[in-house]
Image (cartoon, rainbow, N blue to C red; front, side):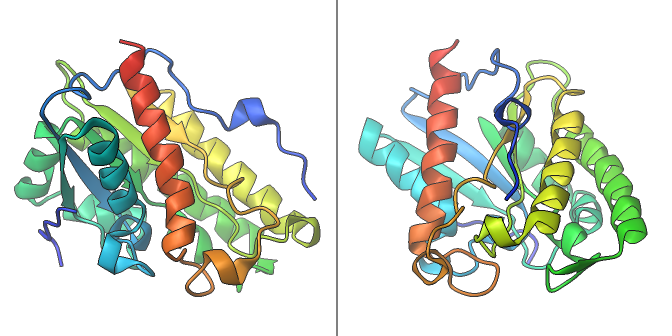
Length: 242
């Protein structure tokens, strides 16, 4: 599937999970045509809403409806990929070159790394989770280094993970683990220029799961629209700050 090109209750400290680096700039957000590369797992692929390309299709539609211009999407998302899998895929020069030529890059990765240490998101092997988190952080560092241009770096957005069970009041252990994992992602983004974290863990809190999810993990069209709206607004804000 590599090379797919598709057009297309825990009190959270909010300051820890907001978009970092306000100096981010999407240089050509208002140009006639803009390109985006999507990397990662089933959420990048849009599983659960593949007919509309998931949240990336929503971003595309918002861009074109709002500005009456074209957004070209290069989607390399592969279901079930971990950060280790994505790093291996970046040995493909086509993917790396496409990412570097794009106006900005979206990355969804880490959910499968996280799930490897859980039993249906109810029980955790804490030692395994900590070990996988360190592997993930190192992989994410290398992923960013491979696709980020040293001169005139492109904007890279890393989307955080979320708890798909949505009833946060009953899932304090899961929520704390998700929060800590997202903090690790933020820690990595802060080490790289023009790289930022986009929060998603708050989008589904206490919503009716059947209305926003296609299965136990993946959003449906309505769920992806929530993610797409946040991503689009973040990109637009970055452009307005140039």
